Length: 186
Image (cartoon, rainbow, N blue to C red; front, side, top):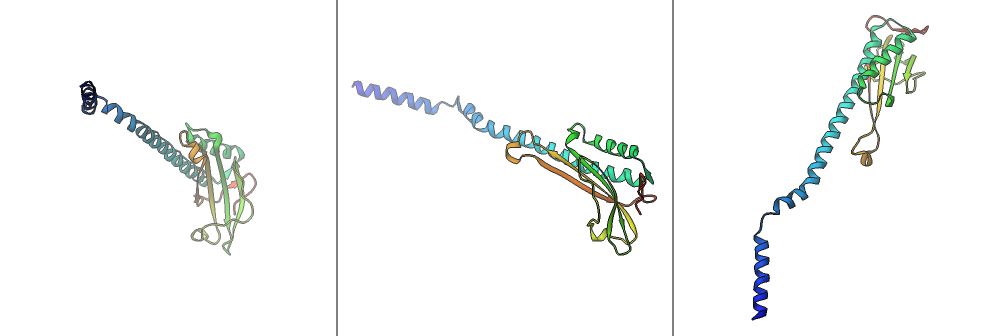
């Protein structure tokens, strides 16, 4: 009899716990919260990365556009062009930005040669350079602008490390091939 009443009591407690639904929400929240938090931070990180990549493309376009408008560029003018272009990366760290502007002369044999190249944080181009065949027009000039940014994700750094976001743009001079300092681009 005593065993039956103890077993009946235990059975009643277990049955009562099985029917009790008060903690289900807390358990569901505990299981889903890490997934939802991860999705939130992942989406935020992707949005920041895409925004930064877009700014790098805008910098490349600004470098080419500002350089292509000039006929003569002094050292102070080039500093202004680089400063104006690097301001686009704001509010991100401009010290992680590399920019290069190169003036390319294409001869009658469609060989592209660097006439002058100016850089901030990057590597200046020299000698002959390979350009897309569609742009190799005999006896012409091109402005090549290149921008790259060392992007370090805040949340996903341990997974991906630092990513290099880069873009380049070719543009024809608008008026005449620009002269930089004493070097002409023809």
